[in-house]
Each structure stands twice: as structure tokens, then as C-alpha cells.
Image 1 (cartoon, helix red, strand yellow):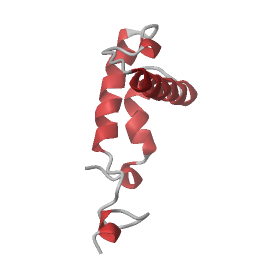
Image 2: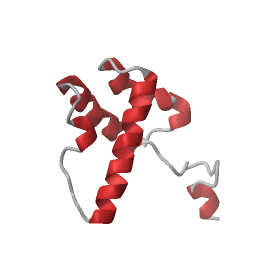
Image 3: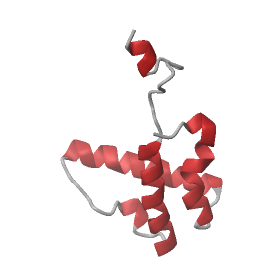
Length: 91
């Protein structure tokens, strides 16, 4: 796992920024994709390519895949217990 405090949130969004999106555009895209995922889940629909990516260039679609991988590497429950992480839960 990757500690987001060590790398910063910018590390997660870096592929999208590298693909030419501004920070605001990257944040907007992440929000749109997250919203679409929640709505699709409620509907019971699984979509391989979210609609918010349909109008994006190939470089942005590829960067989105890299961004997802980075999101999965971020440890949401810190091992040192900071912020109520796993060490706190374990006793």
C-alpha cells in the first residue's frame, strides 16, 4: 500500500494531469466517474467504459486506468493508527 500523505493526492491524479487535464478538469472527471459508478451500482448495471470517458481522448482514458490503479494502492486505513487506522482498531 502507498501512504497518500507521503506521496500526496497529486500522485494519484498525476496521470490525468500528465495527459493534459488541468487540476480542475481532473477533479471534475474523478467526481463524474465516481457519481456514475454509484448510480450504475444502484441500477445494477456494470459498464466497462464509463460514459464520462466517452468524450475524452485516448491519452485521458489510458491515464484514468493508471489513476484507478494508484487509487487502489492508497492505504485508506493507515497502519500506524493515525486517523483511526488499523493499528487503533486492533487494540
